Length: 153
Image 1 (cartoon, helix red, strand yellow):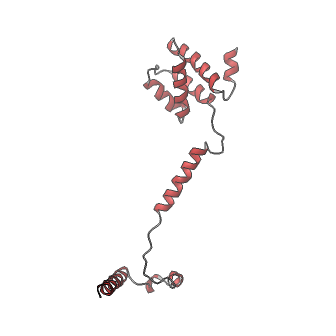
Image 2 (cartoon, helix red, strand yellow; image 1 turned 90 degrees about the horizontal axis):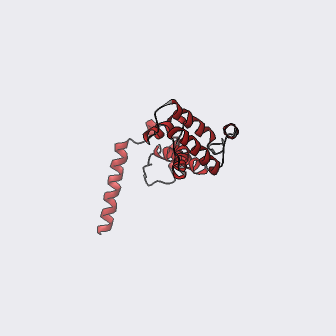
Image 3 (cartoon, helix red, strand yellow; image 1 turned 180 degrees about the horizontal axis):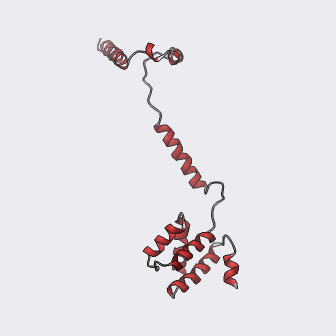
């Protein structure tokens, strides 16, 4: 009766969850230890879905059978999850940082032509009227040469 009461709940606290996992491991393996139950709970918290948890459990020595898949699915259902608003604060911040990094990669460096006041006007000039890339390079080369000449005097 206690088993059905626990199964009907969505999430349990860690102590209850470890006890339930211990019972399930005993049924699957014939033994259970507190540290093993805690380890399986930790695997469940890291797993993204029941199939991934099943794969982890099988790789750790549990039988590759329907009972293990059912146990993994039940465990995932009992895991305390973050709010449905998008996960933990850490994960949300990580997603935001990833978006910012992707957006930053899409930006290109602007060439500095030395004329600060003309920038707003340049933005409105059609591409055909703007200097070509080679013309801008040539102008920079001339400016650099002039600066070198002034420093040598």
